[in-house]
Structure formats: C-alpha cells, structure tokens
Length: 91
Image (cartoon, rainbow, N blue to C red; front, side, top):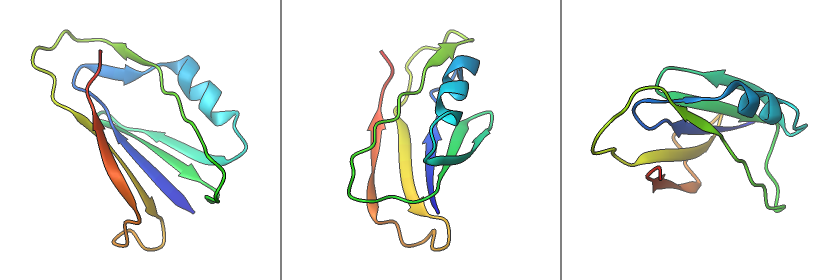
C-alpha cells in the first residue's frame, strides 16, 4: 500500500465534491482528511501515470502563504521514501 500525504495551504480545506470524486477511483482504498493534511491510501503503484486533482476551498483569508508539500511513501516502509516530495503554492 502507498500513502500520499498532502499538506494543505493555511486557510484551505478539501471540498466535499473533491473527496467524493477521489473516493470513486478504484485505485484509492481510503482517504483521511485532517485539519492540515489529506492522506490518500492507494492499493499500489505501477509504471502507469496517475493524476490526482484536489479542489480546495479557502475558508480563512491568509497572507504570505507558505508552500505546501506532497509526500509519497510505502505504508509498510515509511522511512524508505522512494519518490521525491514537491512543493507548490496556491494561486
């Protein structure tokens, strides 16, 4: 099993519609939404490219947003990060 840990930009939340669309994908086993992050549990990864689109809603106006990160790691070997982390800032 693979986990995608997506930190949320300050003041943003995952929209209910986005969660519903993600849960409809067969590769996704489970989704956990926390205050500052979304955890997406995937059955497995292979060499096929996957695209995940998360729709966020701004609930609190924030200034000077800091980058958010995405980490992908093996559930059974979390220390063995195989895929690099990326950062992005909301627009």
